[in-house]
Image 1 (tube, rainbow, N blue to C red):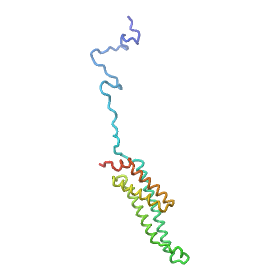
Image 2: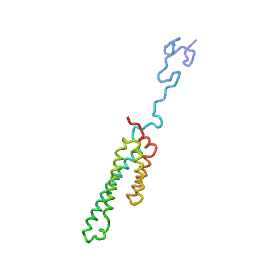
Image 3: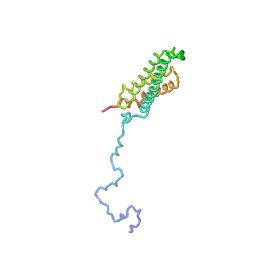
Length: 184
């Protein structure tokens, strides 16, 4: 009888190896064994707290910093206008300009300054703030959008869009997850 056919299941083992009868065969590495399958890799559960600031929340923070820049420009323009009108009251060539009330301009300057400081405070606290900061930023965005409707200038349109985007980005589920995350 010849054992020359390598595909013969009843033939002698190839390579001079003898089977170890009575002992369990070792499984080659990389093949699963018998029993339960390997557990899947551990993943974050759905709705787990984010470890980095989501992109939409970071965008809202950047928009707040842009509003701070606009408020600084607005504060300077209101102050310059009020000072120019105050100085023009003494010059007879600008009598028509002297009729404008400068108290309103000084009040708008203070309002622009306070609004800019509020936006800077909110933007600075985004990394460590809680749900109260989220609600405050949401209200700030809504009020910015509402106040931007009245003058409806170029800066008014920009403030309107920025206010809406801030409210949406902070109010969505990613914003809620970021501001309600546990802090250890």
